[in-house]
Length: 469
Image (cartoon, rainbow, N blue to C red):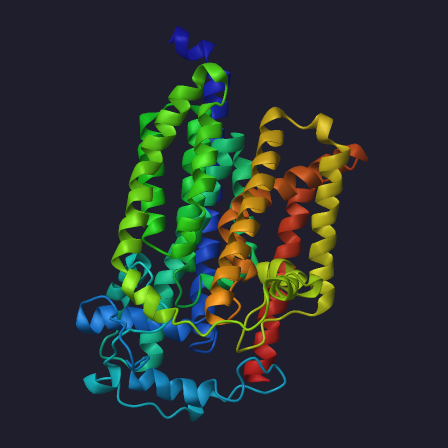
C-alpha cells in the first residue's frame, strides 16, 4: 500500500493516458471504418487507380485458386470486367467534362455465369506479390454468387479494413514516439483525413495494405528508439517489412529507408556501430531475402510485361521531359494529396495552393525554430528529409529505366505516401515551431487536420457532382 501511495500520482497519470489513448484509438478506428465503407459504396466501380487490374488479380485468385499467369497474347480481364469498362469508362476516362453514365444503365451479364468471371489475371499487376489480394479473397468468396457490382464492393471492403489497420498503427506510432495520447490521436486523424490515403483505402487496391505495413514498420522503428535492442521490436520490424514486401513492389524500393531508420534508432555512435550493423542486418535479412526470391520468381513475367518499345529520345531530352517543373508539381504535389482518374477527383487549384502554403509555413517554422526543437524532433525532420530525397531519387531513376525500355511514364505522387506518417510528423513539428516563434496560443497541428478534412470533403463533392449531378 505504501508503494502504491508513493507512486499514486504517476499511476493515475499513466491510467489517464491509457484511457485517453484507448478512446482516441476507438475514435480513429470508427472514423476510418465509416469513411472506408461509405466511400467504397459511393465511388463508381473501377474508378480507383487501375482498379480493374487489381480486381482482376483477386478474381483470378478466388475463381481459379492460383496466381495470375502472364503469357504472350493472353486476354486481360474477365469478360464481365471488360464489358463494364466499355460501358462505364470508355469515352469518359480522364475527361472530367464528360458526365459518368448512371449505374442503372449498365447491362452486365449474370454474375453466376462462370465463363463471364473466368480470367487469367495476366494484367499489369500480374507480377505483384499476392498478400493484399489474398486478404480480399474471403470477401470476394462471400459475395461469389452476387453480381459484379456487389463483388466489387466486397473486395473494396478488404481495403477499408486495411485502412483501419493503417490508422490504428498511426495512433500506435504517434504514442510510441511522443508518449502523448493527444499526439497519437492527431497522427491517426491525419492519416484518416489524408485524401489520397483515404481514397485508396476505399477501392480495390493493394495500396491501403502498403500504407498500413509501412506505418507499422515505422512504429517498430519508434519502439526500437525507445528500447534499443528490443528483440520484440526487431522481430516485429522483420515480420512487418516482410509482409510489406509481399504486398507491392514499391515497398521493396523503400527497404533502405526502414533499414536506415532501424540503424538510427539503435544508435550510430562508434562504440555501438558494430552492434547496430549486426542487429539491423538481422532485422532486414528476412524482408530482403523475400524481395530477392519474389523478384527471381516473377522475372520472366516481368520481362514479358516490359517488352521493349523504347523511347526514341536522347537521354538529355528525356531527362528534361521527365523533370519539367510543371510535371514535377503535378506529380509530387497534386498527385500526393489528391488527384486521380475517372470520376474527376481533381480539385480546384486553390486547394492545392492552400496545401502548398501549409507545407511552406511548416518549412519556415523548421528553419526559424530549429534551435528550439527537441532532439527527437530534429531527428525526425532529418530522417524525413533524407527518406524523401532517397524516395524521389529512386523513383525517378526507376522511371528513367522504364521510359527508356517501354516509352511510358511511371511515377506518381502516391508512391511517396508510405512516408506519410513521417511527413505528417514533420509538418506538425514545423507548424508548432512557427506558432511558438510568433507566440500563437493555438496548436496548428489540429488546424492541419481540419485543412485535410476540408480538402477531402471538396474531392468528395467533386465526384458527387459529376456522378449524380
